[in-house]
Image 1: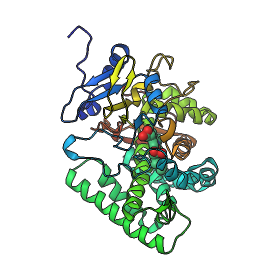
Image 2: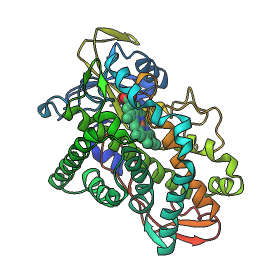
Image 3: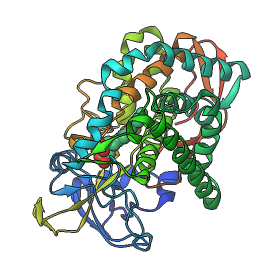
Image 4: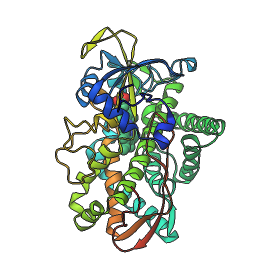
Length: 404
Ligand code: HEM
């Protein structure tokens, strides 16, 4: 292998926990932006790492289908059970029908109407962490607000939020795969019961919408309702938790940028965009080619898996000036962290507001947030970012740059 050529293996989870995937992505963008990744324990796939190619694939939902799954899976795991059934895993026209059911709930006007309540919840979560003085920012701060908000939208009674919080932490956190699976099954069971109740006595919430919905002329089956509830719960919590924590980590590592936000809260909306770009928590998104297609001279066959590496696209030097610089004043900032096109993140307005309120509440308290030990990064090829982020809170200005 010539000097400077990294060994390419994008599907080793350890790379994201302890390594630097940006070395491989940078090399791929420069030398092989359309790269055939040989099979490992996962089947072989095309890896697109350049911004223009990722965006072009995103634009063409007919050629690049979501219905066979949007994440790489070992071949022996079979097809994704949500394939063709959940919002994320359907193609038009069914996708548009499904999306129309819930779009209004996530529109700017609806999300704005929740701002006061979201700020109150965020303030309470931050106050509790500050009172304790030290915490794991991921579990104690970043995970709570998105979970409470999506639970409220879905019509989960407030008395059940803590139970759902514990279950989602078990299901999607680190730890024993068996325990994770059981927690996930319990979540599905919970939504099965809730959806049955809402079907009989609908309220003004998302589970009621799904439980009483008609798509393409037929009611959603109970299984489809549960799978879509799961899609909303996971979508609504996982990426926001990791982006919020990754953003805090970036701000601790760049105290001058944190100081800018403390001095001028008007910079926060732009800072949220930079945090989304910088953290790019959705590591890869997969599509399946529905017909033979050529990308930069490479022939992709019908049925081939085509993966879009969003963190790589968001550091593409042909699109972003000095892409490895974290800059809360970056303009323009047309990142792809929330996807693009047909499946553009349903919760984008909500996620942006959750992130803005969180940093607003912390910055507004003039807190000094400092690392309390090394963070742990997730060992996953699906989402990347902090798994644990121990911090201390104290009154005062920004944290010193103690780690890089
Ligand atoms: C920082 C936070 C978030 C990030 C980085 C993120 C990222 C993404 C990305 C990249 C996609 C596109 C998937 C694809 O192309 O197949 C997506 C779709 C989706 N997101 Fe988010 N998301 C976030 C927050 C949320 C929130 C708060 C919700 C609330 C429910 C949500 C719900 C969804 C759903 C349901 C989809 C599927 C949409 C569709 O297929 O039409 N996300 N998200």
